[in-house]
Length: 195
Image (cartoon, rainbow, N blue to C red; front, side):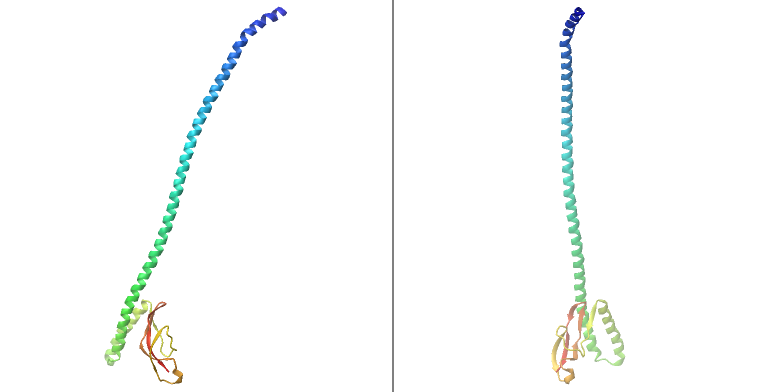
């Protein structure tokens, strides 16, 4: 038995270096395969990192564009409000201008009506009422001051008249009527006040 045992040993020794070479070759091949896979994964990681950077750059640009769009929308809304306000102001200024011109016509009608006969007065009064209607439609209202205490915020005192103690500082005559346009004084009433 020992001879057989001895005989097999040299054969094993002869194959051992081949086995070591095969294991070494297998390990080397596996290492090369792993290195190639690591290189491939590293390259893929670089590509993915570049994609992420491009996507992040695109997202940043999108955020910038979105912020600019929101700012432009806000600016446009402010512009629309300003334009609406300016249009309303211009409209009111136009109405004020026309109303002042019409008030002068109404004054002339009132003066002329004092000198007309009854036949002409009716037609004249109709035209006068039409002018007053137009003023009312425009938002102009007459200030009622006759018999009221003198108010310097709505009246100009042209003088004082002796009309008894009960009429002291009270409007006793109106020379020109006063008018308001909404909450603005359009024309002060010219009055005489009792003393």
